[in-house]
Length: 325
Image (cartoon, helix red, strand yellow):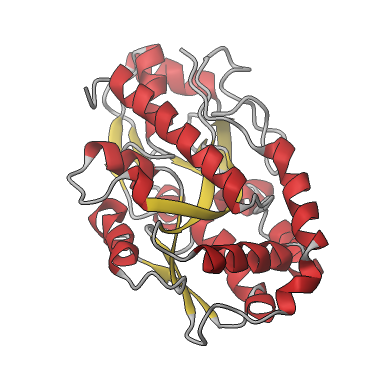
């Protein structure tokens, strides 16, 4: 079984270069007011979304003007944050930072009063690679160990993840469909809580993003089993892909900043420009490297192309597994 979401790496360098070329114009009058910008995250603190958003919040005020706050809202499987942004004034001061789960998947499977077209991407942060991991003292230390143990002991391994049918859950469902394995799924508020539960010995396996566990893997506190991508993660170069191990499940994703579709175009353009300029600054690059965020921003137009392709792809996957008609 092969599933993939279109990669956007080839366009990243072009997008940054284009934004830097117009950088002198960013000093022009801003369409934003002076109120803080809120980056609202539909997960708990400490995960990859939170880590990445804080690189922007620490560097973008110099380029955008207002202070930028990062706000975590993990309630209702992420829909608390989504609806909070949806109901805010569409002035560019309340934005959603999310992977596809709370916005693309929920648009298909949940009873929501919005459609996928009611959202517009402002910038894509990065491509994300869902990664399975455990403790170094667990008897499972490889993908093959997992398959062997779960085959012999079905429905005994606990597997933690956030965002049902999202970035760190849907690859597990596809893998189980591919292999016939049965695991006990344990929803969490986000990557930070999942990591704490794994390290505390309260769960067997977890799924998260490389940035959320890279430091612990490097220090030997966690073991990364495998990555659901075509290529290995640059921050986890010793961790194999599932395809390398003989399991043809590939499902990378993204982290985007969204506004509602009624945010004025001049505000979207200003935010796109100042965000991308900020992330190209030496301070942001150093922060991104330090936390293994792997930030490679895309502009609003290219992000929207990627977003709509993901809507189509995830819709097809959800139909294939019987979640929607």
